[in-house]
Image 1: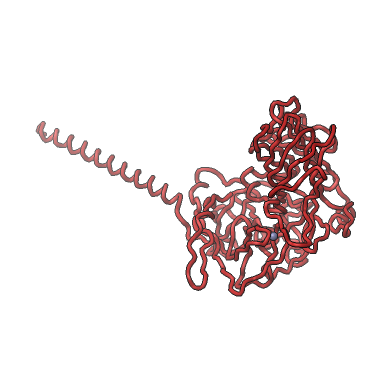
Image 2 (image 1 turned 90 degrees about the horizontal axis):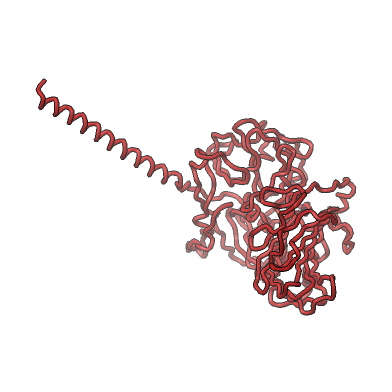
Length: 493
Ligand SMILES: [Zn+2]
């Protein structure tokens, strides 16, 4: 072999290698690009039903109540009944021609689960195990190798209650009453009973006269039903009020969150809140920054948590959240936990957890149906107040948590199906099995009702994680398409 030939061959080989590398590189780049693109691929996915309402809407109509509250109502064909406002229970007037909006359209992260396992509370898209040609969307409630029990509307995993993530909780709060939408019509009883020291101002309340000594001036919540009579807070879904739903028995809900924007005017002003769920009483105190008093939480008069000091800024508005949810007490100022130094059991976030006191069935029945005007068996009590110094609330919004039903879902039809995972009848998931529930618990056809031997989503049926609503509320009005409303673009949690 001549040296030139040799050189040429080496050169050729190098060129080959280089072009091979280039080809490989471009394949990898193309692959990565395709991968990134496909990871965000838009499944032509329209929410088909209202099973995830109010987080996601199926075909629906939109209403603005005279109280100002805006809400959506599921429409299957047409509205069968007059929808009811969740904020004030006013029956709405249905216009002659109702604009029906199609379901939310979603972007789905299809490859996320190749990198990390699905997490509880994820909203997932999957092939319906009964008919894999259909896509379903639900919330992931239990994971492989876990034992699930639905107890009092809560998710219990391996005998311990599962706490929602903050973003999931935010999505699952449903309005009970918001004073920013206060009805002005005659005969409407205010939901908050105000001690005489408080004056209504705009959507909120101002403490005009500070009570003497340790006494607080209170605002006490009194729930009322559609007839205006005192009633327990229930799993009312305004979204379902326009349809021909046969389920009529509401379920009492005791998991509540109170949100407000408060301004304290002095170092002596302390915000106090009290909640009761059946027999358990919770007390919360929020003190101003710079005061010598910490923020504190009590359970049945026992101090269970306190902060390092005060948390409310003096003279400036702060968003506060006081909640009893999933056997967990939360006390937040501007999104941060403020009572976390504790001898009690807490979550990693610093919330206090507790075991509820047991109720007999007789007691439970009494709470389920409190006699009119007799408040002794109201399942919950909520009040908030201020002592020591001046303060104001810009508004008060009371929310209730989702209640996962496991009984009487369809007009009293009690079925002992494996997916019920009812109390005392836990359901164990095997490897590669996922359990799903819709946020619209009374109107969701999900694992609880599939009636399969294994009422689960097998891993191979997973499509991806819903993460963004990109085309909400597309609809038709008088034969003309209604443009998508960008204010509805949102992340799915
Ligand atoms: Zn209303």
